[in-house]
Image 1 (spheres, rainbow, N blue to C red):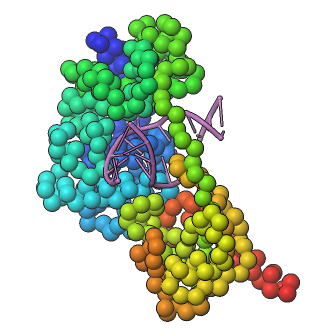
Image 2: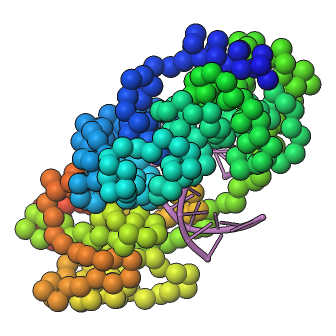
Length: 361
DNA sequence: AATACGGGGCA
DNA sequence: TGCCCAGTATT
């Protein structure tokens, strides 16, 4: 393990990428970056990290922000529960820790949204603690170097033991980042660059030619196909948007009313919308069909222009907790999913065509 | 132990 | 298409 550690640090010192959360940043910045990096690629996170830190430079600033502001800064990044929990975590830090991010793994684990990976990352990187971490990269590197030939997940106890052994001694934060960096840039899933890898001399996968079979990972299930209807209502240049409840899919985000059409439900779209909005709805034709793939669902959304029969009676039900008319400019101040942007954009094209349609009649 | 939770990039 | 990404919370 000593030689592996030295090789990792040498690799890191020579080849680490310059990333905005790498050098001389606050523990709060490390925390923000680690939450954003959960299941999300480095390149995707970079612009979000810059914008988020500019808008919420400290835990105090984040704690004082509105939920809509935080979700607006997270819009498009996905896994929006992360944003809600980071926001809640900032409030805990301000209330219970004087605005300072806690230093120990144990205290970090108490924060919402911080699990064993993230606690290890913050404790080691921001505070120099000998705290281990295991993510997808670590699974790959350790399974290959040590030749672990059984089904693995990032929760595997043996991997955590190895990771713990790895970070004992100097520079635990750099060691954790080094093994992840190696996994991300050298020890990749496909076509690993073993010829450039400082660990290849001691690597079981390299010795046995098993790079393509290790790590052995469980198979993922295919997403479920779901049909949905979306309603586009425009009134005096403003769009009808509903805010989803905090829990569940797209929690806290704003979107045009959308309803799931379960298999075999032949009811009119207007009837489905009326149920959610609590007032009569008229729909006119189909603006577009939007496809959107999530981890567990494959959505096909039929987008319909329409109007409300009794706008003053509008309420909201089902997945929604609020409804309002908002200008397109206001969209940048609210949390909006990528799916909703697609639905909105597909409707915008139709809106521009409207005059022509009138002409044809 | 299994499932829900986004979105994008790549072979 | 399927896989994977600096995972966590809930059931």
